[in-house]
Length: 237
Image (tube, rainbow, N blue to C red; front, side, top):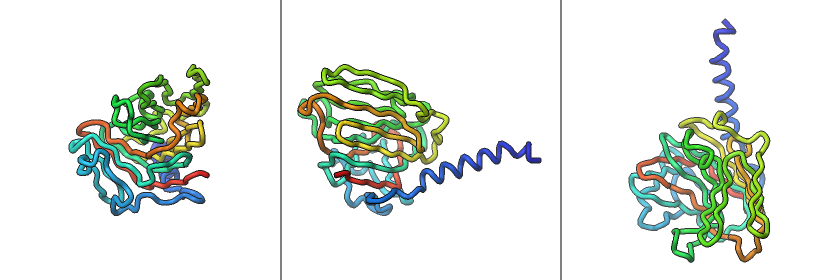
């Protein structure tokens, strides 16, 4: 009987561990930035894409059938912080969080930012768990899931592997996954379900870096859905 029930026991333990990760308390000095009922404190960008965002059953819902869009937290001048949230893709999709986002002065993009990528299971390590550089006018480096990138003062990249990094086996397909983003000075890290996803350190001169800006949650693909909940922020001094 016990042998026959091993797969069921493993599945139950995995579910409990996942629930613990997602439901864990945010920690000291974190503030709740989504009240679970309204989009108070948030705005869509561009403004005309507001119909793409709604609140349902305690979660923010992004509907790509209505627009490609960002939903942006009210503090638009954030420098260093920790951000915690849970996400879910009911189907396929591409999303993420843009960090220190500003309006792109080159006009090649809507916004410049550093971007922590997430997507549906199977989208690949170049998206799910990767850092992306939305930085027209400068080199846009590779930093895929499981990689640590160091950019030197001459914009030369060095990549190494992260030991114990999150893998696709750690991701809950169509279920909730917990993200923790840490941004301090020139160091950028994020994890998924308690395991490191990717990280980079940027040693470029200050004038070439993004120093402060918006936190933007992305709705990337037409027709996709993405859900967010349990959203907490700690601004670092």
